[in-house]
Length: 246
Image (cartoon, rainbow, N blue to C red):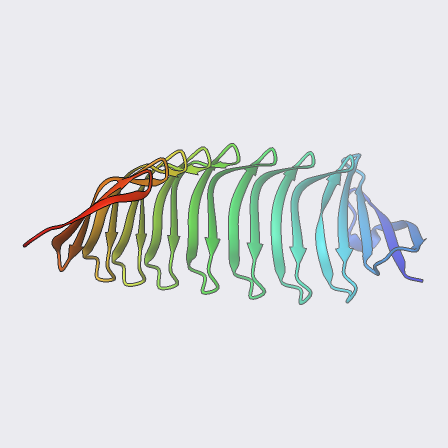
């Protein structure tokens, strides 16, 4: 039978940790893990408890405070090898402040901020090499503002803007050499507006426009920077094609 030990210790005002007294030790039969939890009660602040939760291997798994049964202040979590894997800030049981996660090497992988459990402000994710993978902005839990993603060589991959969680306006994609590959225009998350497509060297291949997520109107096709064809679309279907003589 597996047992979970819950050790509760009173945090006596003005005393050294060695003087903290054990007030209770509870063994609970039937618990499915073997983690140990040690709780220090703060006598200066009624209702505040400091929790230290240990994993099966005896290493610290997580630590933080509860106030009146709700998470409060900074909480940290650790990987099995003892490296901090996550830290987040709480107020009255809700995320309020920084939320940061770490790789097994201790490098930051996600850095974001919450207000009353809602994602706000800049959110940044990182690659294994420590460089930025994505940078984005949130308002009221939704993507709002510039959004950028990057290759491992630090060159930009995508540059877009979001409004209320949807792409809106001009969005650009780049290849790993830094050359522009696509320019699409969005409206409320749908392709709607001018389009440009480029080859791997950044030379224009095709231009046109979308309307309600479908190709529409006249599209122009280029070879070696010269227009060679016009293609006419309606509701995403080709109506006719006209070669262009040079």
